[in-house]
Image (tube, rainbow, N blue to C red; front, side, top):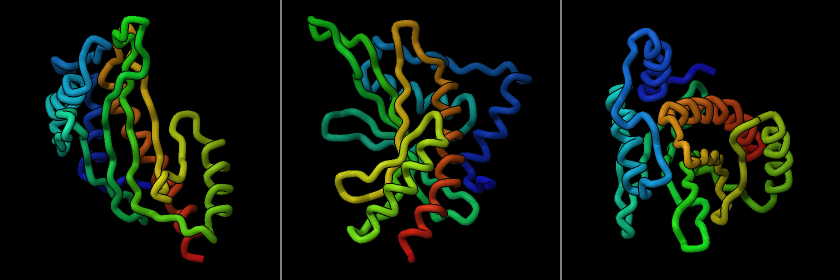
Length: 185
């Protein structure tokens, strides 16, 4: 399915052009040493510098940031992509040894109890065909999709976050119509 969002289209076009242009942003590698806020700020700057794309930045009570973008694909209602970071492992002294970048689709598609078995069966089939992101029903009975990227000691190229973002948009464009069909039966 063809992505129609300005953000996804811009990212895709820029990703194709980037190797020829030799462009590189200052925030091209995320590190474990960065805290959550610094990681999210680096991702925001990278999207802006490398792709001229602005993510909506929401500051939480804990001063951490959540990055949001509204997306739309052909024959798929608008949805929200979220990018956030979190510590994923610590050593005995509590020092962060791994950090994760979490990408998620916020679908706003509620699953009624009578449709849950069919939705879960369809999700299992879709998850089997995906090597990277996973569909699930969250605690609010909403369909979600999630992918975590680990930032190890050697770092994580920020370009990998862009790649994951694009792959999730494509995966959601494939999954949403299948799940919506079950919900409206």
